[in-house]
Length: 272
Length: 272
Image 1 (tube, one colour):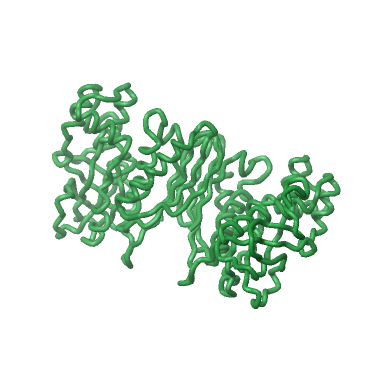
Image 2 (cartoon, rainbow over the protein chains, first blue to last red):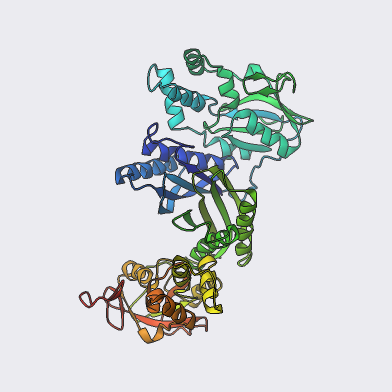
């Protein structure tokens, strides 16, 4: 079971995303929380706060977005509630079925485990940066990033499969890789040591970063909203191809990249 | 599973209710939806939207309210989400366990069934009317009504017990008795015939109605937010003492009281 509250102006903008895309994204965000526990999503309920200026077409599109995203994982929109509000508010709750397994939490990582990710990192953050700079189209690379902001593509099947493979900890990357792995490190009482060479910057991010004068690695390390999965596995587990090994779990605390602590804007040599 | 979205200014006011009472009421509203299906509530999750001016004390009190109301039914607050918002927003989702039974819905009422209610009717509406008139205290009767608005007392155990007794339809009275029984009549394709003599007006309501120049029967018939349970039972079922028989299910459609259709402000002789 997972719940999220999404507020217009903070989590989405109606001028940047269609009702359909907002529905897709709101559903994706909750469904990915469910698969990150190793469960198969089953149902979703939506509390919808609506200002008077929102028309039925927009609500229909939102509903279609919820339904289509749920269809990807075989879940259904089981019900909801509507209320009048000043801005659009979405209270989304998803349920999943663990099939009798225990949930994979953030607290099971052990020194010696492998750290791996499945799915995209930094795409949605780059898309948001493009929108913020007024870029609404362009090359296929830029369109991919804009679409990634509007409609994340979580690697749903990887979650339950990772659980079956013996993942010791898992979560979906919603706040940014470093911050979310920090949650795993804190909850498990371990350190996470990442390998910068394994954190490849995809071409689309390089292109957008050049256009905007930004650091693409910052998007990879700190960008949320792609809902990639990050997990730790015992070293003997053979990782399926969807997973990329990016580091190891060690004794200690905190998250480091090539032995250095990273802070927004660059490497924090004082904290390293 | 049941979900509700509560918005400050529409569903509650922070100057009329404490954080603790808002938590109690928000939990009660969802837990009563669960028992109205004949299930035992198990867990509740809360999405909380908070303006910057709300302090930690208020949030702690809200959380205590959620916990204490859940304790009444053996449920737990299983998690939540916090976001920044312009006004306080609560997205509450409750889960229940049917113990393998089918849920009691609104669509199973059959001609010949008995209509009955458990719990209070009109108290919260009278309390809201008192607050609206500036009454914040007074005689024990008035205090009871003010408290009923701030903190409903749904008859939780009556829901699962009614299911075991064979209730054919059930819901919690959140919009008002006539409107909610109208939902049962519509969903079941039947008429509901209520007996005015069975709809007793409690003394507290009479006192408040006299003070405010209001019609106490209007509160009983149309007041929501007490989260009484209304159900239909096969005629051979012996009703436990918590239930009051108020009418019967008949062929036809709509809800009538002593054969007349009721509209806000009085009896609607044109529609009768």
